[in-house]
Amino acid sequence: MKSLKPLYEFCGLLSGVFMVLICALVVAQICARLLGTMVPSSDELAGYAMASSGFLGLPYALHRGAHIRVSLLFKALSERGQQRLEIAGTLVGLAIAAYLAWFSMLFVYESYLFGEVSSGLLPIPMWIPQVPMVLGTAVLVVAMLDRLICFVMARSFEVADAQPALSE
Image (cartoon, rainbow, N blue to C red; front, side):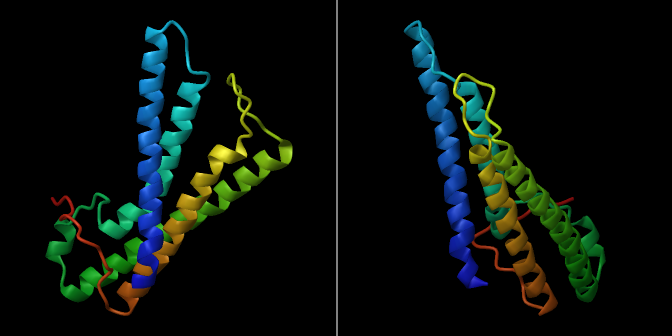
């Protein structure tokens, strides 16, 4: 659905922001070491940013057609067979994404309830860096549902300016 495109792009933008944050933290740590000091918990923060970037990038990548696919089997099937395989694959992906979204939400909720904090120099409440995992997987569920609806209604899933998927 075209109305969901801004949501997918926003997730992609946030993913990119977290990548830039990783770069900034690495550069800050290098500069700090040259000056004989350190940036507290920079490795820990970079790890949180990497996880955030990965999870928030999932729905954007699905929307852009950037996930790796093997299309060798598709070429051997009829158009109807291809549609059925797409629906089956999307259903499996939806089930996995929903499972991950549900249990990551429970994980973050438990971290919040128990007041869990990081073990680094900065005591960061763990639910804060875990929230992007929930957001990314929840939007991935929406993207998978969007994809499923498109295939069931025999429309092609809108892949915005995507490069061809890896084949064979």
